[in-house]
Length: 433
Image (cartoon, rainbow, N blue to C red; front, side, top):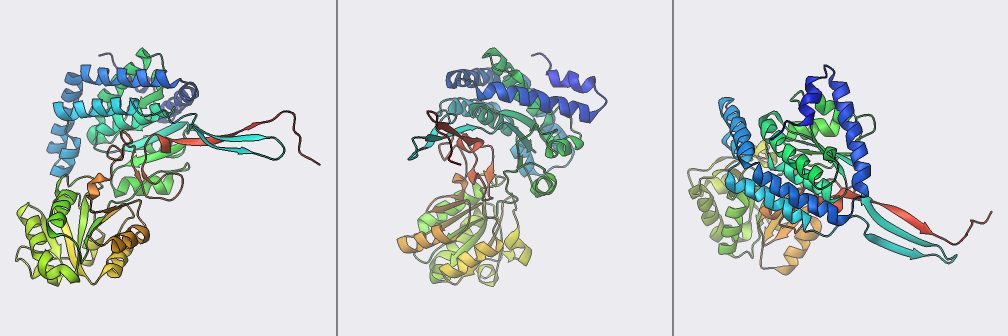
């Protein structure tokens, strides 16, 4: 596998500003070509990329093993190492996700609205690419492929900046993707990886690379996202924390509640859709609280609870006020008893992060109130919080979960990576003086 062009750019440049400006210019030029690329060409490119990822298996896994070894030597947490680690199965999952994105309907060129005016003008609102999307992420190597493929499908160019932990893996994946683009006749610069771990590169992206970056998507911990939201001079799709709740309503089926809770918390503890707080309604606490807490403890999850939860099992430690606002990303959960639906909603609105929150109940009216009143990007009824994922929504994949209210909210898939323009069709109309 040949070396990435960006490596040579870095080697020949002592000036990070010059390096990043060059990446921005190439991305802007590539974005103009991508915006005009036919749907079939983009889909061929995505299938070719998936093939290149599989063909590059040995190189990608070797580079990932180096990243994992470095993370272990640095004393990183097991949760981070799990997010970082690739194996044959996970790499195949990455390639398959790229193929699924290729099979999605083309989001570009969709007619979103058509208005016929009394003066005979026909006005169309049509979906178009956003342009150049900067993605800044930390330890998940799969973000390289997901983000690059989603941007490609939506006719955009992507500038990817991996964290130090996943840098080698990301470079290897990005190289395979660039090769796939070129083989399909599209500009290899439509997916570029920043070839340096220097944190100043992030600052350059946040400044917009001289107007070449249209939007920034951060994928990582609170420190990264706070920096991006504070410093960015371009729009940002982001969420700070995934403080997700499972509320067991007074009319919840116990077996369902236990199953959904364990999946929400323990399926993968290090993802942003993992439940971090359990709320049990006072109305069912006598029958439901002990079995739910015991199930968590027996599954290897530490529980930090209020007095009622501590009384259930000596293994429960006391929850502090900070626990209600903590994203553990680990096998730890906070738990408390709440006095009804209003108290549950109030707790979520006070302590949550507007990411994903679930209610378990057989009461349709209570479910409807919860879904309407909890102001989160994703709310679920009788379903795991870990469905907070673009693939599970049928988007093929996601570039991130957005918890803001502008443009995109929830999983950011191909449709959310477009904007729109108006096309006005006339036959000589002029506006009266």
